Length: 67
Image (cartoon, rainbow, N blue to C red; front, side, top):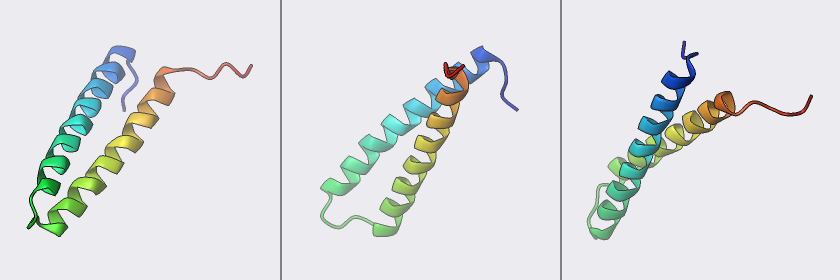
């Protein structure tokens, strides 16, 4: 399980990088009039999964100040 702050931060940067890369790939694939819809769906689904993982890691790194 990820617990070390440096490890969490490193993983967060990796996920953000992959998320940006997927933006680029999806945009380029969309420019092609005859793109593979199944591939596009898979890329978008992966992007959503990354978004959830990024949000989870950010919540672990930024403590709640409710108390």
